[in-house]
Image (cartoon, rainbow, N blue to C red):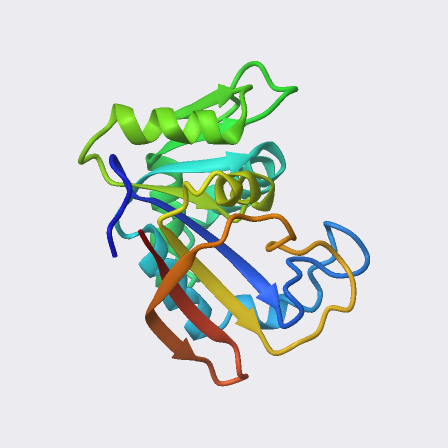
Length: 201
């Protein structure tokens, strides 16, 4: 793989077999996904995705959900150790939240930006050479325009053995053609696949 110049941009998402990242009930419909995204395979996959990341890029809705849940996990002795480590990383890392409505960040180490996703990520790539990966964290509204702009260097995908039958898809018609190399794969006990794809440039 030959990466684009600057920092590596990574993105993660869970997808049903029909390519959807939520169910037919709308953006809050994750019932099909829950049994798989808490598996050992999914937790190990999560540990891989943040290991080299020093910046998290999130959409406002994801940021509100994540920061309302994960900080309490960081010091929970009953939580899975992998969940605790992810929670601690999320709290301490630099966060960039894309929002058209927020003006002040209610979370520490967070910057609010009202600008197109591609412009924001280009700036992050160029301003911090060698500072670690930029992880677009479970935010399809950001991943989609980055794919359209060919700015994603690595995809962490969980593919679940379910057909959602409705909901939005990650890969829509009109994306530029691109080639990806499978650099890691793991199969979970319930048939979920943890896949890592690197962009071939």
